[in-house]
Length: 442
Image 1: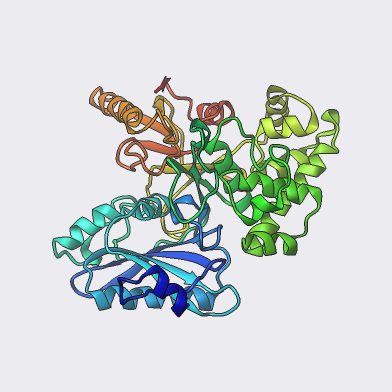
Image 2 (image 1 turned 120 degrees about the vertical axis):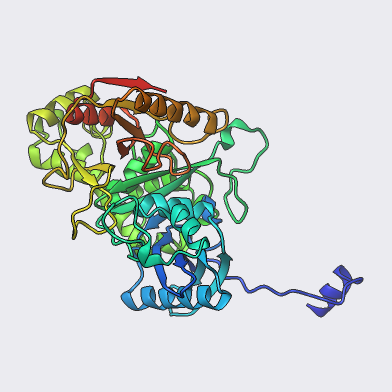
């Protein structure tokens, strides 16, 4: 090393040696602190992809799924110590590297500002981080700030989630020649989606469809198996993983190749196993139980139709005959332990009742979805302008969108906000439940 350094850096007397933490878990915490030293952690998020892949390139799940209670509190207490040590008043994002085989941890980044992760945390929990941080900067104590989303709790209240949120980035690498499709420590994604479900499988499959409307979910037939692509990830790694699971690769083998936590790999395997079950089912023998379980695992009508060799409309008709319809749930930050009046909604098949009433006569506006090259914030502005004008005319509005980076998905932009995919199936489900006066496409 000395000889190498001497040759390469002959004009420098300093050498930085970094320790490689590749393959470790990457976990993030959002913490807020007021001028009176009150601290709370708002959200903790876990990257499905291991360290070595930029957070902006990673699939992120909130709340964390694979941490033990001890690890969770170890990281939480460290986060609070850090924000106190730096004397930050406002909001702070802390990223950790955690050894998967021990409790060894490193802090890899501290952002004393609202980052893109903060926007995600805010939308994932229903806790208005930017609003609260602005109030804290004015010297207002946490207990006296009201959580404007719930309208009931104060801001000095750690959100508890009774749902699972999955964020997946969108890459538009196919639009460029000569560009490497490998993903790593530099960020190439141009947008991201956020989905909400009651199980990881449900939220994960929803998110995959949101990223690309031509994808039906965790489909094992899109890519072929390539161990190299599993070892050195590309933007299509998830579909290579699906193909590998269908081909019979074990969870242990895939962990060695990808370093994705085994908990996630088992969940992916559940989807593929059920996909195989559907493929062996005849079109005419899709029972209530088979279809109900598929919907609970996040399979779309189209996805079920492809597996059982039927059509989307036929499966939809069957589903309506069986009375298998989604339930509307609120993001209320209090896991339904207290009554909360939020307009922040999602659909799930893992429920037994709706969380609110449907008086009808709303106007439904469809958002523009994920940012991509050629379609970005200007299209979201159209949706926001539309919502504002409808409000000026005294109409009540419903927004359907799934992009956490947008203004249209702010809780105070519409009377009801559905964080849902914009597909024929879901829009029709919302339409049938809400019975709106009209629908505006943006």
